[in-house]
Length: 226
Image (cartoon, rainbow, N blue to C red; front, side, top):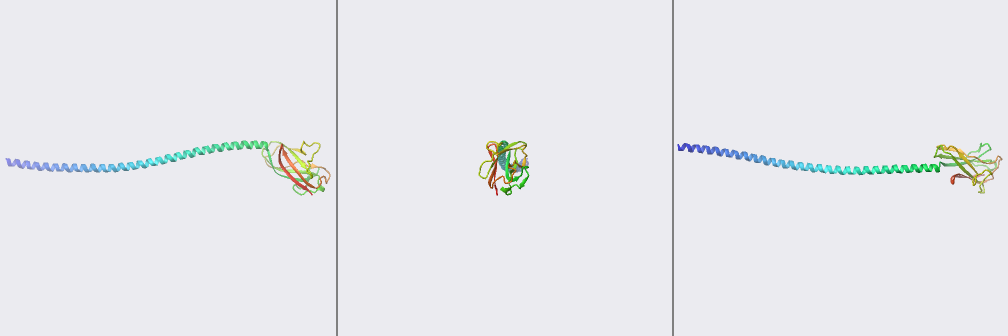
Protein backbone atom coordinates (compact mmCIF):
# COMPACT_ATOMS: atom_id res chain seq x y z
CA UNK A 1 0.00 0.00 0.00
CA UNK A 2 2.84 2.31 0.73
CA UNK A 3 4.32 1.80 -2.73
CA UNK A 4 1.05 2.72 -4.37
CA UNK A 5 0.87 6.00 -2.43
CA UNK A 6 4.37 6.83 -3.51
CA UNK A 7 3.40 6.32 -7.11
CA UNK A 8 0.36 8.48 -6.65
CA UNK A 9 2.39 11.26 -5.04
CA UNK A 10 4.99 11.04 -7.76
CA UNK A 11 2.38 11.28 -10.47
CA UNK A 12 0.68 14.16 -8.70
CA UNK A 13 4.00 15.95 -8.28
CA UNK A 14 4.78 15.61 -11.96
CA UNK A 15 1.38 16.95 -12.85
CA UNK A 16 1.86 19.87 -10.49
CA UNK A 17 5.29 20.54 -11.97
CA UNK A 18 3.92 20.57 -15.48
CA UNK A 19 1.10 22.85 -14.34
CA UNK A 20 3.56 25.25 -12.76
CA UNK A 21 5.59 25.30 -15.97
CA UNK A 22 2.47 26.06 -17.96
CA UNK A 23 1.57 28.86 -15.57
CA UNK A 24 5.10 30.22 -15.81
CA UNK A 25 4.95 30.06 -19.62
CA UNK A 26 1.57 31.77 -19.62
CA UNK A 27 2.83 34.42 -17.22
CA UNK A 28 5.92 34.86 -19.33
CA UNK A 29 3.81 35.25 -22.43
CA UNK A 30 1.58 37.73 -20.62
CA UNK A 31 4.65 39.60 -19.47
CA UNK A 32 6.03 39.68 -23.01
CA UNK A 33 2.65 40.79 -24.29
CA UNK A 34 2.55 43.50 -21.63
CA UNK A 35 6.07 44.60 -22.47
CA UNK A 36 5.17 44.64 -26.17
CA UNK A 37 2.05 46.62 -25.37
CA UNK A 38 4.05 49.06 -23.29
CA UNK A 39 6.61 49.37 -26.09
CA UNK A 40 4.01 49.98 -28.76
CA UNK A 41 2.10 52.27 -26.41
CA UNK A 42 5.33 54.20 -25.90
CA UNK A 43 5.84 54.31 -29.65
CA UNK A 44 2.26 55.50 -30.16
CA UNK A 45 2.80 58.08 -27.43
CA UNK A 46 5.93 59.39 -29.16
CA UNK A 47 4.09 59.48 -32.46
CA UNK A 48 1.19 61.31 -30.81
CA UNK A 49 3.60 63.74 -29.17
CA UNK A 50 5.33 64.35 -32.50
CA UNK A 51 1.96 64.86 -34.18
CA UNK A 52 0.86 67.20 -31.40
CA UNK A 53 4.11 69.15 -31.68
CA UNK A 54 3.67 69.45 -35.44
CA UNK A 55 0.04 70.52 -34.97
CA UNK A 56 1.10 73.14 -32.42
CA UNK A 57 3.76 74.36 -34.84
CA UNK A 58 1.15 74.65 -37.61
CA UNK A 59 -1.21 76.47 -35.26
CA UNK A 60 1.56 78.88 -34.24
CA UNK A 61 2.40 79.46 -37.90
CA UNK A 62 -1.26 80.10 -38.75
CA UNK A 63 -1.59 82.45 -35.79
CA UNK A 64 1.44 84.44 -37.02
CA UNK A 65 0.03 84.53 -40.55
CA UNK A 66 -3.32 85.65 -39.17
CA UNK A 67 -1.60 88.40 -37.15
CA UNK A 68 0.27 89.54 -40.28
CA UNK A 69 -2.94 89.53 -42.30
CA UNK A 70 -4.63 91.59 -39.59
CA UNK A 71 -1.76 94.10 -39.68
CA UNK A 72 -2.02 94.27 -43.48
CA UNK A 73 -5.79 94.69 -43.25
CA UNK A 74 -5.44 97.50 -40.69
CA UNK A 75 -2.78 99.14 -42.87
CA UNK A 76 -5.02 98.86 -45.93
CA UNK A 77 -7.94 100.38 -44.00
CA UNK A 78 -5.69 103.22 -42.83
CA UNK A 79 -4.42 103.84 -46.37
CA UNK A 80 -7.98 103.84 -47.72
CA UNK A 81 -9.01 106.30 -45.03
CA UNK A 82 -6.06 108.53 -45.89
CA UNK A 83 -6.85 108.24 -49.59
CA UNK A 84 -10.47 109.24 -48.95
CA UNK A 85 -9.28 112.21 -46.88
CA UNK A 86 -6.83 113.24 -49.61
CA UNK A 87 -9.51 112.87 -52.27
CA UNK A 88 -11.96 114.94 -50.27
CA UNK A 89 -9.30 117.62 -49.72
CA UNK A 90 -8.39 117.61 -53.43
CA UNK A 91 -12.05 117.88 -54.41
CA UNK A 92 -12.46 120.79 -52.00
CA UNK A 93 -9.36 122.48 -53.40
CA UNK A 94 -10.62 121.87 -56.94
CA UNK A 95 -13.93 123.50 -56.08
CA UNK A 96 -12.02 126.44 -54.60
CA UNK A 97 -9.83 126.69 -57.70
CA UNK A 98 -12.89 126.49 -59.95
CA UNK A 99 -14.31 129.46 -58.09
CA UNK A 100 -11.04 131.35 -58.42
CA UNK A 101 -10.34 130.16 -61.96
CA UNK A 102 -13.66 129.26 -63.60
CA UNK A 103 -11.83 128.95 -66.90
CA UNK A 104 -8.31 128.32 -68.12
CA UNK A 105 -7.17 130.13 -71.27
CA UNK A 106 -4.94 127.79 -73.22
CA UNK A 107 -4.30 129.92 -76.28
CA UNK A 108 -4.92 133.42 -77.65
CA UNK A 109 -4.62 134.60 -81.27
CA UNK A 110 -5.36 137.91 -82.94
CA UNK A 111 -6.92 138.74 -86.29
CA UNK A 112 -7.75 141.90 -88.27
CA UNK A 113 -11.52 142.46 -88.53
CA UNK A 114 -13.84 145.06 -89.97
CA UNK A 115 -16.53 147.09 -88.15
CA UNK A 116 -19.04 144.20 -88.41
CA UNK A 117 -16.60 141.76 -86.81
CA UNK A 118 -15.88 139.89 -90.04
CA UNK A 119 -12.34 138.55 -90.13
CA UNK A 120 -10.12 140.14 -92.78
CA UNK A 121 -6.92 138.27 -91.97
CA UNK A 122 -7.07 134.83 -90.32
CA UNK A 123 -6.33 134.40 -86.63
CA UNK A 124 -2.64 133.97 -86.00
CA UNK A 125 -1.61 135.24 -89.42
CA UNK A 126 0.52 138.35 -90.01
CA UNK A 127 -1.45 141.58 -89.98
CA UNK A 128 -0.58 144.44 -92.28
CA UNK A 129 -0.56 147.82 -90.54
CA UNK A 130 -1.75 149.43 -93.77
CA UNK A 131 -4.95 147.34 -93.75
CA UNK A 132 -5.46 147.20 -90.00
CA UNK A 133 -8.89 148.14 -88.69
CA UNK A 134 -10.05 146.28 -85.57
CA UNK A 135 -7.63 144.03 -83.69
CA UNK A 136 -9.81 141.17 -82.47
CA UNK A 137 -8.49 138.53 -80.05
CA UNK A 138 -9.79 134.95 -79.90
CA UNK A 139 -9.24 132.73 -76.88
CA UNK A 140 -9.29 128.96 -76.62
CA UNK A 141 -10.29 128.08 -73.07
CA UNK A 142 -11.15 125.18 -70.82
CA UNK A 143 -14.43 125.68 -68.98
CA UNK A 144 -13.71 124.51 -65.43
CA UNK A 145 -16.87 125.80 -63.80
CA UNK A 146 -19.51 125.27 -66.46
CA UNK A 147 -22.68 127.30 -66.23
CA UNK A 148 -21.13 130.17 -64.30
CA UNK A 149 -20.41 133.57 -65.79
CA UNK A 150 -17.36 135.81 -65.76
CA UNK A 151 -16.41 139.30 -66.77
CA UNK A 152 -13.00 139.37 -68.40
CA UNK A 153 -10.96 142.55 -68.40
CA UNK A 154 -8.85 143.23 -71.49
CA UNK A 155 -5.75 145.36 -71.92
CA UNK A 156 -4.33 146.35 -75.30
CA UNK A 157 -0.87 147.91 -75.37
CA UNK A 158 0.18 149.79 -78.52
CA UNK A 159 3.51 149.72 -80.36
CA UNK A 160 4.93 152.19 -77.82
CA UNK A 161 3.89 150.04 -74.87
CA UNK A 162 1.09 152.40 -73.85
CA UNK A 163 -2.27 151.14 -72.63
CA UNK A 164 -4.99 151.87 -75.21
CA UNK A 165 -8.14 153.26 -73.58
CA UNK A 166 -11.34 155.06 -74.52
CA UNK A 167 -13.98 157.13 -72.79
CA UNK A 168 -15.90 154.02 -71.62
CA UNK A 169 -12.85 151.94 -70.63
CA UNK A 170 -12.78 150.45 -67.11
CA UNK A 171 -10.07 151.95 -64.92
CA UNK A 172 -6.73 150.40 -65.87
CA UNK A 173 -8.12 148.41 -68.81
CA UNK A 174 -9.11 148.88 -72.44
CA UNK A 175 -12.50 147.14 -72.18
CA UNK A 176 -14.38 144.28 -70.54
CA UNK A 177 -16.06 141.21 -72.01
CA UNK A 178 -18.68 138.98 -70.37
CA UNK A 179 -18.93 135.23 -70.92
CA UNK A 180 -22.32 134.04 -69.77
CA UNK A 181 -22.43 131.14 -69.34
CA UNK A 182 -19.04 129.43 -69.36
CA UNK A 183 -19.27 126.31 -71.48
CA UNK A 184 -17.68 123.22 -69.91
CA UNK A 185 -14.79 121.53 -71.71
CA UNK A 186 -12.73 123.05 -74.53
CA UNK A 187 -14.20 126.12 -76.21
CA UNK A 188 -13.19 128.97 -78.46
CA UNK A 189 -14.65 132.47 -78.41
CA UNK A 190 -13.79 135.79 -80.08
CA UNK A 191 -13.67 138.82 -77.82
CA UNK A 192 -14.55 142.33 -78.92
CA UNK A 193 -12.16 143.98 -81.38
CA UNK A 194 -10.48 147.33 -80.75
CA UNK A 195 -9.69 149.85 -83.44
CA UNK A 196 -11.49 151.91 -86.09
CA UNK A 197 -13.36 151.60 -89.37
CA UNK A 198 -10.57 153.31 -91.33
CA UNK A 199 -7.88 151.12 -92.87
CA UNK A 200 -4.41 151.68 -91.53
CA UNK A 201 -5.82 152.53 -88.11
CA UNK A 202 -2.73 151.16 -86.33
CA UNK A 203 0.91 151.92 -86.95
CA UNK A 204 3.51 149.17 -87.54
CA UNK A 205 5.11 147.68 -84.46
CA UNK A 206 4.62 145.11 -81.70
CA UNK A 207 1.36 145.13 -79.74
CA UNK A 208 0.19 143.08 -76.77
CA UNK A 209 -3.18 141.82 -75.55
CA UNK A 210 -3.74 140.75 -71.94
CA UNK A 211 -6.85 139.05 -70.55
CA UNK A 212 -7.49 139.43 -66.83
CA UNK A 213 -9.92 138.00 -64.33
CA UNK A 214 -9.96 140.26 -61.30
CA UNK A 215 -6.34 140.80 -60.34
CA UNK A 216 -5.10 137.69 -62.18
CA UNK A 217 -3.73 137.76 -65.71
CA UNK A 218 -5.03 134.64 -67.43
CA UNK A 219 -3.25 135.07 -70.75
CA UNK A 220 -1.16 137.52 -72.77
CA UNK A 221 -0.23 137.60 -76.43
CA UNK A 222 2.28 139.78 -78.27
CA UNK A 223 1.88 140.22 -82.04
CA UNK A 224 3.41 142.42 -84.73
CA UNK A 225 1.79 144.62 -87.34
CA UNK A 226 4.06 144.77 -90.36
